[in-house]
Amino acid sequence: MTSDMSDLTRTTPCRPVTRRRDLIERAAQWWSRRHGHAPPPSDTGARPPAEERQAGPSGTGTGDEARTLWRMRTTVRDEPGSLAALCTALAGLGVDILSLQTHPLARGTVDEFLLRAPAEVEGTALTRAVSGAGGTDNWFERADTHDLVDAPTRVLGLATRTALDAAELPLALRQLLGRCTIRSLPSHSPGSGRPQEGAPVEGALEETVMRLRAPEGGVITVERPYLPFTPTEFARARALVELDARLGPRVPRGQDVLTLPQGPAITVRRADIADLQAAKDMHARCSARTLGMRYHGPVGDADRYLRHLLSPRFGRTLAVRTASGDVVGLGHLLWDGDETEVALLVEDEWQHRGIGSELLGRLVAMAVEAGCEHVYAVTQASNTAMVAAMRGLELPLDYQIEEGTLVITARLDATPVPSHRPQDDTATSGTTRN
Image (cartoon, helix red, strand yellow):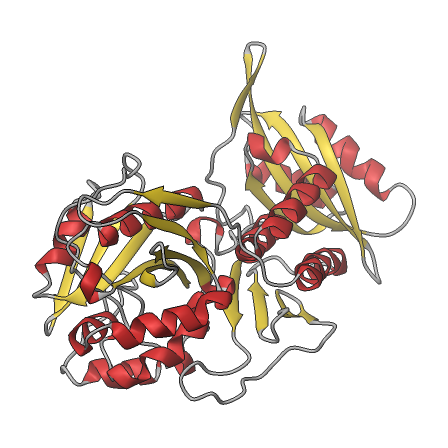
């Protein structure tokens, strides 16, 4: 099984492909027109100001009175009494201030509050009260109980996650900065090898966009429409990236031993760039048909994408190894903008043993844990094995087909996927990146 990329990958809905040869042409242009893989979409895309959008969770109960949690950000003059005026205005609405963070600016101060308000108090009423007390550039959104964790505790938790696993950095940045879009660009194009524009060593901050130099030399871009980043947020993000750089490449090295219905036991564990040579060796043992179904492009170019696919910056990879140490299967979970792709490759001699379905189940479980709403696989319409494997997830599926190319999207807000091991796992799906 395999699935990995393509501009015919679905971006709600799947983009049509007018001619079969467009597949290779679009794959060759992939990196020039996409910003690279990004974390899952559950927390991407900043919400507009409260006047435009006030939906969200957060009802709480205090005695007999329902209460609502809000996150608020406002800019006040840097002078005595400014904060007191805000607090007085909020108190007039019966609003409790649960936490406060300050972000000093050259002129003024950005104050970020977590509020608990009576349920009948709407965002528009909060906006009027804060504006009347001298607050400007006001921003509100509904909060939930997860926001009750104080900032130092949250930051320490994110640092711990990042220290244990390099793949956590993009996800940790998203949780640190709130709703935003995070994308990673490698330092060189995986296809052409040409250098790509980098970020300054110290990073760059431009209103709603920050660019940070990735530890491996690429660029991490963070964008948050409607809400400019403060220098304090920029410093926090840069410190988290610096921590990642000092620790170097790392992935959890735990592994599971699996007994197959046919053949000897295998192990499944996380993989990264340290497994590059073993992955190339597996490619050399795969048939042209297997590689062609996986990459949908020139088979000879398959190896050049492996360094990117194995990088924890762009997703997570699982490797299947034999007792002798050979890699015989690879599964990728790839952050692809607002979508998440699953991609699988099983060596010919190890197909029909349930390896592909085992990898697929584990990847989808990881996607659920990361907060993804959907995953998709790209394959050929004739690949009934891949269709069967996706159906084996027992999740709602959407099918988009154009000129022989099939995109299968699974919705993850249903029952958590179990691990399956059907006998036929020759399915392959994926796309090629330049």
